[in-house]
Image (cartoon, rainbow, N blue to C red; front, side, top):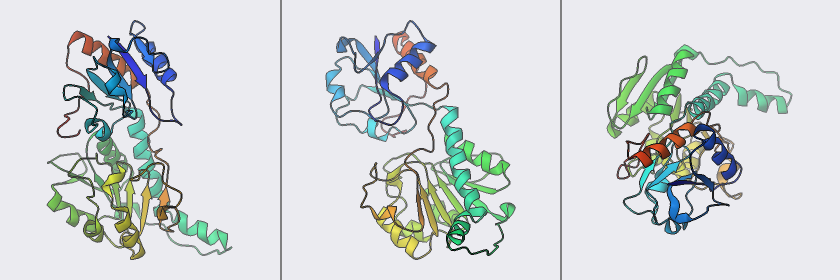
Amino acid sequence: MALLINVGQSGWMTDAEIAQAVRAHDPRADVRPLADPGDLSDVAMLAVSKLDPDLPHRLPNLKLVQKLGAGVETIVRHPALADHVRVARLKPEAPAREIAEWFLTYILNAQRQGDRFRRQQARADWSPTAPRVTSDTVVGVLGLGHIGGLTARLLGQFGFQVHGWSRSPKSLPGVTCHHGQNALPAMLAGCDHVCAILPSTPETTGLFDARMLASMKPGSQLLNAGRGDLIDEAALLRALDGGTPGHAVLDVVSREPLPADNPLWQHPDVTLTPHVSGWHLGDALKDVAENLRRLIADEALLHEVDRRRGY
């Protein structure tokens, strides 16, 4: 059985680099980049960041699609992927830590009045403003899985009051936990910053519509490093114009790359980063090599996804 590598996007690691890294964990593995695939009927496992629309049709013996990351919504819903094909994701520590640091970066920037002082500098305005007190600041984390849990812990270590929200009940030390959609608006109303790291599912798509945005605390900050379809972007722009929330920091948007004429680029209360919050895989590619071994040995896979639930 062979593993075929097709990253499917530019600006990140190449197919050859991924293949080399996987082979480093298992030199005996049959790992092939798409540029040199050999006989495609040998391919039982496909590793991708973005799944090409036509590639599954070319792989008659495909049994497993391995996502080179966490989000799998475009794979589990892929129209060309047969029902019997399994899906697995990665749960690496390195990008999870980077995503938590991304949230912390923009929260601390707001706490220390970074945007205000940049505007003042542009007009040579020396007007001191006090930073916000960390221990008086409430941060909400939406999604308490691998990444969200790490984010909540990191924020707690910095002294923030941390509240967490998930679809089903969770318990994390030092985190006030809430669950269920009915509990979300009340939690949002008390949060100074809201960190969204939710997967894309039918329940989360468009969750932050005009009504949900209106439940947020006036002047608060919404940060999204999960999936772009969480937020109704037209509703967000209207909400920002009204000051509820007061600012949005978006690492993901509904269409990527974001078109140049999209109004998010120009809105004064929006900060955009180009889907870079979690970048490095660390040693996670060992799990790709291990899943190939397990697939061949007919053993339970690491981090297999329930395709019906979407995560």
